[in-house]
Amino acid sequence: MRTSLFAALVFLAMSMNAYGGDNGVYVGGALSRSMIDTEADFFGFQFDDDDEGYKVIVGFRPIDAFAIEANYVNFGSVVFDNRGTVSDGVRVEYEAQAIDAFAVGYLGGPGIEFFAKLGAVYWDADAALQGGIAGVDLRDSDSGADLVYGGGLQVHFGSLAARFEYESFDVSGVDSLELWSLGLTWTFL
Image (cartoon, rainbow, N blue to C red; front, side, top):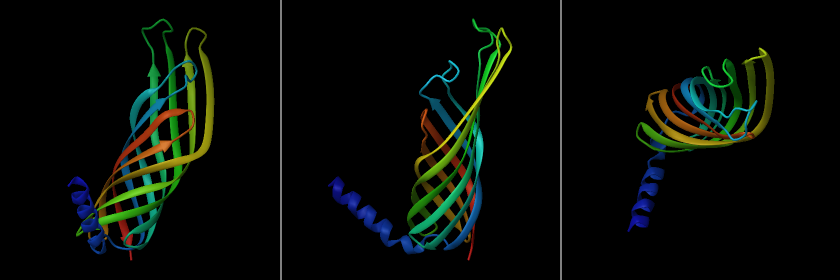
């Protein structure tokens, strides 16, 4: 019974795809909340924090069901400040930004659609350790290219669309790097 209901819902969503958003080039931006959890100690510290960030969106949607999209993402920064502990006065800050590219698939109905994204990300991360007894100032940076995937919901108001989305970045040296975004896009026909 559940399988039949799921199949019927998928068929209904696919049949309504013609009523999705405008096709063409689109641009936009989003405010985001990033969550960073490092798996390895960085300067002897492990991060598990979140911060506000933003992203800039550009894409091309040639047909209703498919688009190619690229983003610049600023994840913000997470800070570990251990004032009042044994190593009093040590501050470690971790910042990351990325450029990513996606293939995006859409399923939708009149004015609202769901989307899934799969692509690659080129990321750059910087960390700094400052303070402590010796007044150290150490800096390190790393970069790489990895997998990214996500999905979300988009509501259309003509050529303007509001979107809510989730993205997960498979970045080496990090246990998890996730991004929740709320943004707007404008399609030029």
